[in-house]
Each structure stands twice: as C-alpha cells, then as structure tokens.
Amino acid sequence: MKFAAAAVLGLAVLAAPAFAEPGPAEGAALYEAKCKMCHEPGMMNAPKLDKLATLENDKIVQALTTPVPMMAGVVGGLTDDDKRSIAVFLTKKSMPASGDLPEVKAE
Picture 1 (cartoon, rainbow, N blue to C red):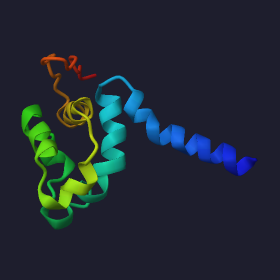
Picture 2: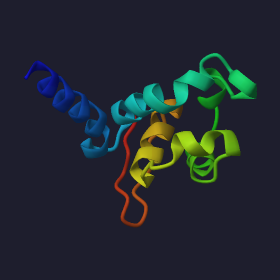
Picture 3: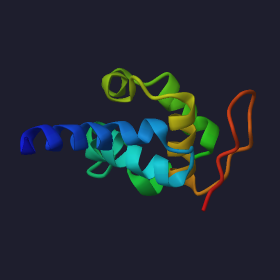
Picture 4: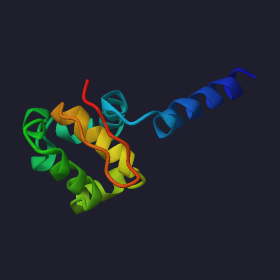
C-alpha cells in the first residue's frame, strides 16, 4: 500500500509542471528537471546560467523549439508555455501575451 501511495505521489510531482500556471516558478522547476544537469557544470559547451540570463527571451524559446541535437531528447515534450516560463525564469524579463499564449510575468 505504501508503494502505491508513493508511486501516485511521484507521478503527481512529475505531472505538476504540466498543470501549473506559466511563470518563473514553473520555469525554475522545469530548468531544475531538464536543463540544470548540463548547464550548471557547462557540459559540452552548454552556456552556464549567468550567460543564459543575458539572452533575450525569444532567443531562449527559439533554442528550446529548435534545439541542438544534444538537447533534443531532453526538451522534447515541452509546451510553448513551458518554454516561455523557462525563458522568463532565466532572464527575469516578462513576456507579453502572444496569440493564444498568455503573458508570462517575471517576479
């Protein structure tokens, strides 16, 4: 019974980002789960967090949308909201609403 409860809790934690509102907190969780492992140590020339923070939001979204081959498997499945949330987390700059996508405010 404990195993089943732990499994359900684990799945809920993994699914939580998919249901969260777009924003820097959502972006931080996604960065921790998908990006940090390569960008924090700067593996294989992956730009570190301080470099990513200097980029424009659109550049980050573009990199997540058309990733280099090494990133493709890691960022696959990210929604447009996810990509925008990661960008706002990294740059600390808000993104205006665009089409069907809501505004993502920096905190």
